[in-house]
Image (cartoon, rainbow, N blue to C red; front, side):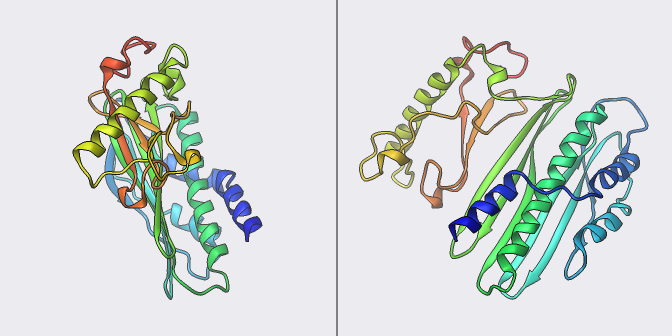
Length: 284
């Protein structure tokens, strides 16, 4: 069982990319390429639904991609949707496809998002092949920020067995410079890890004192194994930047709190970050 989980984890972290992927993305890019040069991203109702069932997923996917509607916006985000329902088992996997002025970056991101969706669907097929019982995978995306300067897009995955677990992964894109931001790139050095970690531990304790319904596995919490206590953030902690240029850190369900707390987010005050920031271009 352990080997199977390790294999699935590896498949998710290094998802197989179907041979037809480049042509699939090229079709979307040709059909959604902006006719004018203004650099903005608009969210549209454009979506396609792919019912895979017993069909070959790649062939069905390629066929569906050819039917992506074109709405004439300058740029857009469309949805790819893998769906399958069995007795007590279901998959509903949505992957975004973005249009950006930099076609190399656009292609790179879209290829990654399709590969993530494909890997989740392959995981669903492996988990349910010849197996009974409750199992569901649901994934969707959430646009946190969409301004002239920034796009922050999260992909949320919920897996349900006896209980549900939820995780999210964000990309924040500088649309003018055409690059994907990383947390270390925002700061002069790694001092931000200590600055933010100290703030979070204080904030967790403050919230727990103010609301007995909130529980965090903060350092020093009784009855929580030391190995599970939150001590410091990762250098590459999951994050996004809000419309008003604030830094928000995100923690997956169960990672720093009990499952009922869900995905936990903290908005970090810019006042504690200003001495560590490279500039005020992104965080203000």
